[in-house]
Length: 228
Image (cartoon, rainbow, N blue to C red; front, side):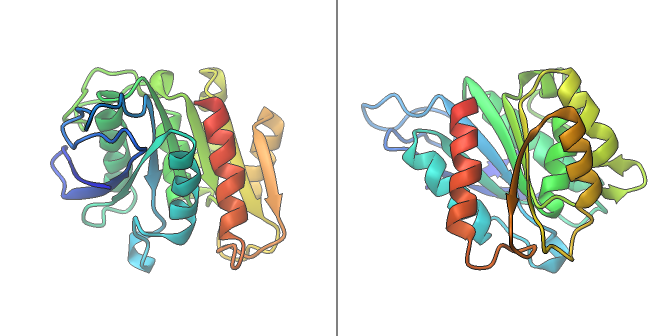
């Protein structure tokens, strides 16, 4: 594991879970191995409800990714900013990964799932990204997975509306949901994902997939490995 400070004007810190090849925080490989050529950026749940990069579900997915040869950057958001700054944090984390890897995926759980769908739908990284202000974000993303996502963060941060842009750009997308979830407003996301023919995975579980983190990690991690 490598500690990462994500540039971008906010205090965003992450942990890079690495394959055997290893990669340093500046992007160079460690040792004699080539290191991973793909990375998944993992967005945590709501920071005001104890969401953080050590979330059990994100770690379960990361374990599958690393075992399959893909690195995973789990990060913590900067200071709370009503969803806007948190989306900026995800953009900057993706830009960090894009500079270092050939292929980049984006993953999020709960609040982070909505962030992943919103950021995955965007066509441009604007000046909010200190690393790649002119990069094509959504066109560059190779996969987006949302685990138990809520439908919106604010009136103008609507994941359901944004999902069509992910589809239009041809970026593979997945939505994983729990049928007994009474925490997130997930039904509109699932309905739209079904219309757009996203990969859909259903679990008989509550919002937190209690006792099923390993199964969730396999379902999400294996799909991301196939796409990356």
